[in-house]
Length: 223
Image (cartoon, rainbow, N blue to C red; front, side, top):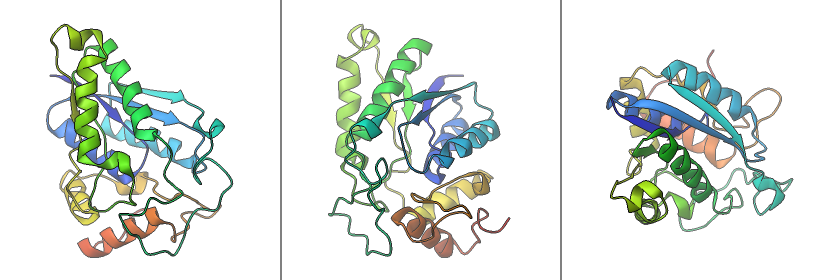
């Protein structure tokens, strides 16, 4: 069995990507990053997801991206709600260089544990215009991994897997249901209230549309 590092946020997408890695026969090393996000409740969701996937190890790491600001997810700037999502427009919920930072951390851990595979749950069809979800970015980071590591310059190859990249939210949910995932464990909302998801941010809207298209209730809202 090969090892893989999986980036696990506690959201629907990262859960599905990690489950696909497990179904492909990988032993999972899950990495969750506390980066100063306002939706910190996702960390507890990541713990539950990691337990459900029976990962070999789950590491939580603090990287204070809120010190830089620049995003409504790491500052008090209001999260956009009730808007039309236009993929060519980068919204304020974009966290500068977040996926670059996350993949760099995952690459460092992968080199230590001897893994050559890293999984990330980005997708480019149903997303909010983030530049670090695109195939060009994933391909460029994979090239970087061979140049930036001792294992890489010794001839070993790192593979960055983005299995959801060309899937719609509905397709992601269908795949997760095939894998018998409990999406009630996950958290997607960017700006949750004391009673649960706001239902109005981009992430909530995309999630709701995905479950509606599949024709099943969202278990997070029907417990």
